[in-house]
Image 1 (spheres, rainbow, N blue to C red):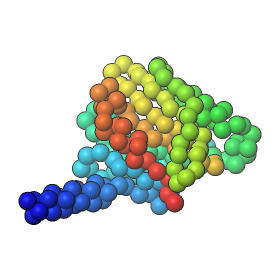
Image 2: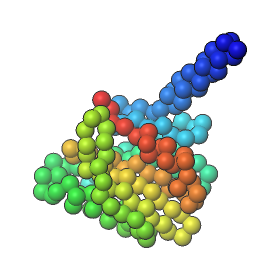
Image 3: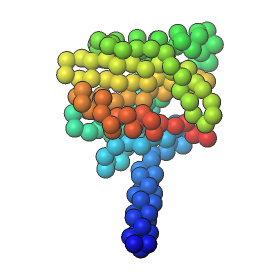
Length: 169
């Protein structure tokens, strides 16, 4: 009996280790997240107006899981309140996707014992559903993003992905 308990504890411990091994860490982006599935996240960058967007994504089924960040100019950050900057991020998202917002609201994102202003958004366009948390950390704007069929965006994998997002220490 004692041997079975030891083996069970060892299996649980090894399982916990392999789950932590899947955590993707971006030194440049200063974040980490556990992307679902076996595929390694891809990192790409692109321009959006004057901003450089850095995207880390795992495509899955008919959608994907992503963390996007961009550094906003200091004068833009100083000229607006965090709430206005986050509202602007939502507006840009809606305009880019031509999506209908079904839920939107201010929240706080907690990481490493600190709180940061954030905004949660749920939207849809046709059969595509979006779930996004936008977080403002000084002048860096993070977008934690799941897009795909409704069951993917509202499912456990999406919940786990959002919960796993952390800022680097």
